[in-house]
Length: 365
Picture 1 (cartoon, helix red, strand yellow):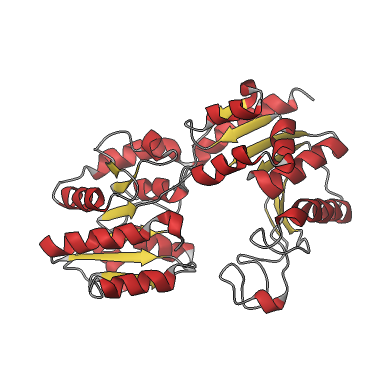
Picture 2 (picture 1 turned 90 degrees about the vertical axis):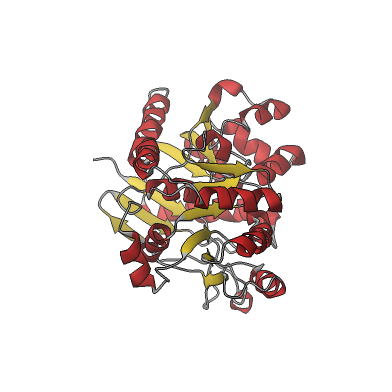
């Protein structure tokens, strides 16, 4: 059985920055864990000494490379192919390792649409280095593939491959049972938004839309699950719209088992993003048989292809979003049809397509 080595470049950061939302109480990057092994997968945390991208983008690439090389040497890691996720710093580090170790490199560009477009326009030499030295570039939506023409990337090495979901975790369960476990009301129609509380996720527009919905539907409740820098702003907006009983900020840092319960407890999943790549949470909602109400950004229109799966509106369109929610609440959804459609996006099926790319690249060495 082939071994898979995972090297995380999440940085160690000074403890005095631990109050920031992306770090834990010990001054470590959120999600930090110790090295561990599971079956044929070994996970290592390189812990480069650098501030997060929000503070020090310039040093992250070289610090990440130094730390990754240290992990590889210390643990005697011998591998045949590199698969990096996100262009920077991982793609840059992967490209440098490719050059020094003589390995093939596959790079998955997960960035949301606005982020990606800004990267293309920036002319950043480190980003260009990563893209130009990758043997294959996977983009999670089709819409952005042509953007690489602007920087003269060989289009023959571009691959569209969407995100997916874990069918072992995200699957239907009885809605009443899920609500009972979460102590949610059984007599209300529940909308769920599960996303970072950041401006590009568009919760502000959803809350304003809920003011319209609340005026004509009194049994609706929206739960917003997540954390982020906009929490206080969203709380103030809820108060301003007098929606304290209809819109609840349910907090973040939920374990995956609880996230599944939230997904299964709702009637509709709503993601009013201003920018996306191809959000994993959309596939998870479909995997639980939930209709998806969202915006026409990134790869979302490539997945929500008709109104048997959900309803899409333009980003920032408060009235359109409110109308879509009301329409969705008033129709009967075919859960089996949604589940059958979602089947193609199970991670095990996406992984098989990635494995074919691996075999193709390894055959070129």
